[in-house]
Image 1: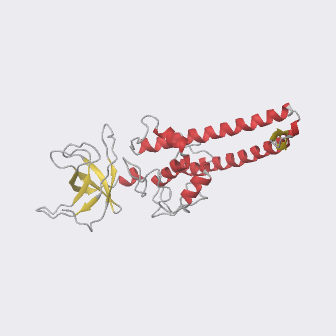
Image 2 (image 1 turned 120 degrees about the horizontal axis):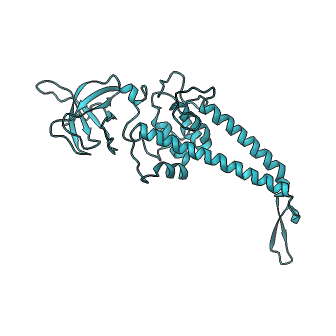
Image 3 (image 1 turned 30 degrees about the horizontal axis):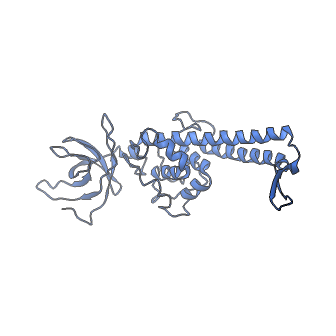
Length: 297
């Protein structure tokens, strides 16, 4: 039987030729004395595993390699796995000390306030998603198109997102002010007291003003599509990197979640790729983490 006071263990890696669709993770670590006094870890099988299969668990920050007992296990089955040795490579797999889970998200899509409603990740994802995405792409070593690249550009994705956001706001507001007087809606009333709505006082709107307004809508559309595409690509990259299966819409899970709830998706990705219980979040750094925090990639 397990000891309720035992430290918790987190499932961290599963290296197979074919990555299983796993959501279950290791849940507890216990010391079970036996003849050889080997340490064991109670694990929830993340997939159907054969006897002798080895993978890593994180026990209170210590990475350990464990083995499946003879006879194998079925997905979802609880079993005791022998601890073979410490896994010196786990830090590379799980993100340089952030304990990034493999096989499942660190928490749910709706857990935006898990660290508090005023946490920088929650606030930045909700109020300024482009900057939150810039931090995430910089953290994961992506370029401003959310594509993995070893080339170091002079401008990080965070700086690119910041400058393009400032430029977008300035251009949008300038175009709006330029034609605002022609698209102001006035309310008048007829003889029966019914409201009559008119733009530009009922006068024809100049052709150039219509063009400027159309240009404004095109810029808004293009900027929105860009943010949507890089958010989808970033989420797909993180899922593939950490072997996280789709949960809601097979084949278009990333697209649906980003389209319908982009701020929640961005917040989940930020929480997954950093240990905010150990390292404080930062709104104004390129990675969203302090300089003392280890790099994820």
